[in-house]
Image (cartoon, rainbow, N blue to C red; front, side, top):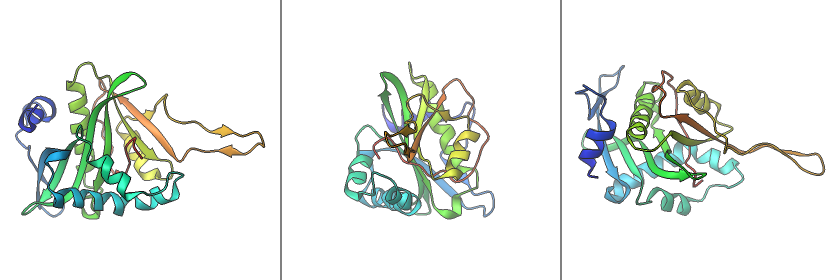
Length: 215
């Protein structure tokens, strides 16, 4: 499916003429929204997306059991099946993005939101909510997908509250606490959240920083 068809058939809200623009509610600055496959991103665009991941989630990665591995993250971000929605300013500077993929989790078809990252000036503006609504809308339009999923660092309470405000809840596949033989409790450093595609897009807003299943 072409990027144009992806937007028209899966993402554009019914009756909406606002795509592909978004206006900052406080500054009036206009931003463009571009849909691209991972392989269609320029080197500069991919590097900008990677920089946003590193800036907003790098510390969470470093504090996690898996650690921060830039080369592995770059490979994950270049996965051919990923679709990106880029938030661009002016001549094309990338100020934020989300990425998603239709895949299988536990044998069930889902749309997985791998990343959503915004630069500080765009956080708390409603843009994160709008991007997640696009992800949910795309998932709802794909048969037989029944839910959207994402992975959130357990330490990032702000992001989790954002997702819960959109209707996401802990998925049955999310790792659970484990008690070792010596009595020590191992608490997972991430949680897997999901939301049925039949739900609405939600009304939450906030700083959405998360990582996809590749971690």
